[in-house]
Image (cartoon, rainbow, N blue to C red):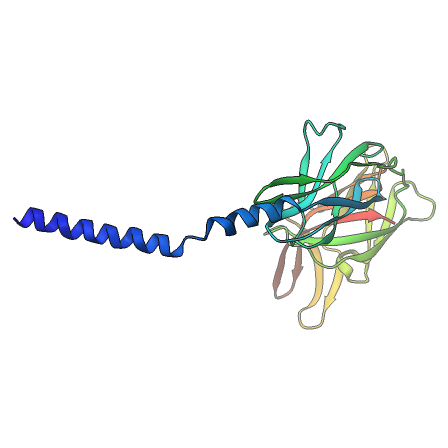
Length: 259
């Protein structure tokens, strides 16, 4: 008798649970309406340009945002998009712009706008854009620099650095404003390999509280290494410690682009 009573109670509970489920389920007409509305969304390319030899700036739009889960751009080197990379917009909006980087110079790319909706994927017409050939630079000149932490690769604000050869030399250079400190340090450049050697313990910054800040190699050697790439004008300074009398600001590295 106890077993029968328990079974009866369980069935009653199940019946109530099922009834409750039916109470909160959306009406089928409402669901169908969402799919129908999403199927009407269209995507369009507004334009594409090449800010640099390795970047494309793409602008697109969608006709509405209801039922749209994600929007962005598809980029491919083949017209049929047999393979492609997706670049998601930060938010779903009727218009959006995205800068796509790390591209190959002198290459034709095919780009289209997309919208992922509850009813499927909508894509726009295809726009074609070709990146220009990368410029070739001399080492000397002005660079846009960004400092990074070796702990988490977090980036600081951009600033300017100048590099110049000393008294007509092809190997001895001076670097001004590294680490945005306004100081000038000496370095040696190898034209054959593009490598740069910066003697350690040079002053790069004067902190308002901690005083002088200088460079130390993270491996304890007497110099910090860097690399200049003429094609594209890249100058990277490898990891070093920014040290002061009170301690260290931690590991740093610098990436620079020729202006």
